[in-house]
Length: 423
Image 1 (cartoon, one colour):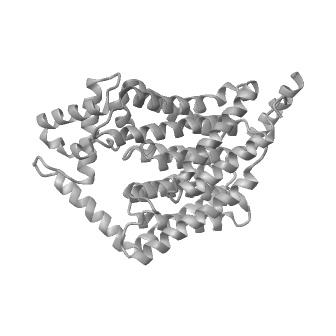
Image 2 (image 1 turned 90 degrees about the vertical axis):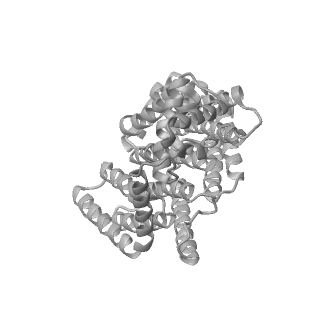
Image 3 (image 1 turned 60 degrees about the vertical axis):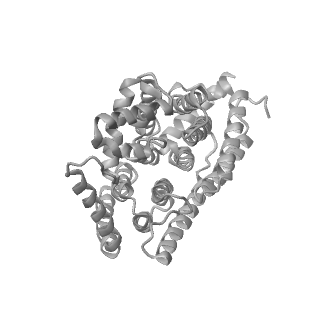
């Protein structure tokens, strides 16, 4: 097994089987799923060690995995340097876990990018099954519980919305490519249940962003004709309007909440405890404290700096509630704790994924997942939640397995043939 010139398929089967188990279990907040994902990454690391030359032969496929590892390692090293008992201990623990998950994503992603075996026929049915189960579970639970925000077994509805979005992007892509004759009907049906489920989480970012991301993925797909694109886009608009009409009570509640937040912002007062106002406060204060420590600082130091900033600028007092959590913006939070080097690594990761999706892989599933990570990172910190980090890391991996362009696969196969001839 270990003397082959190319990796033995048994590694791939074990790695992806573990990833599927992890994808299913993390989706319902089972902590064992994270451990299974880490075990899969250990197998990926072993495969890399025994087939190092094979997995590193293409430089263009190294950037994203390396940057996942770099961002994760940066988080782990930051925790190791500053961690201490106290009120910020849960923050340190969270970043330690998510750092490990990002590193795990990097190793498994490197295996997936260089995969010779077509696993899409095995992975796609599993993604479809998970998408149907999750969406129907959310809809059923929400109808049964009334107007309560669906949390999908999590303690926050926003985390549930992010996880549903990642699962549904992969489900919709699979529906687009599982049956040419009925793919438009299947896509529209899948979008309907996905959007209804997201509305029941009452997460504004997901309700606004998910339709746009779905349309981007759909329009970027070269296998869809112009006529099909026109019909589907029109159908999506109609479905959005119908969803808003039938679920208007939930939509009206979130709109009213947003209006109240905006009205509060227009008032001149020192205390502004609301979703929008607190996010604006965190954005401003996070950048300010980051500017004072451009090479990074401890969570305790950031907390002290935030308190000093609020003393000078009372209108930013909304930030203090979240001082021992995060700044509700991926880039700002990273910059405020790990400094400019942390921000640069995060931006480089975003850019590498976009280039990988658009240029190297021509992969619309990966493009949609990447845009989702970036957009949701504008109003929250995905890489603070172990569940969100694990799900989106796995979503990136599965988007590679199901979304490789046919021409790209041909080039890889051809380069593999030349590689084998030389050896």
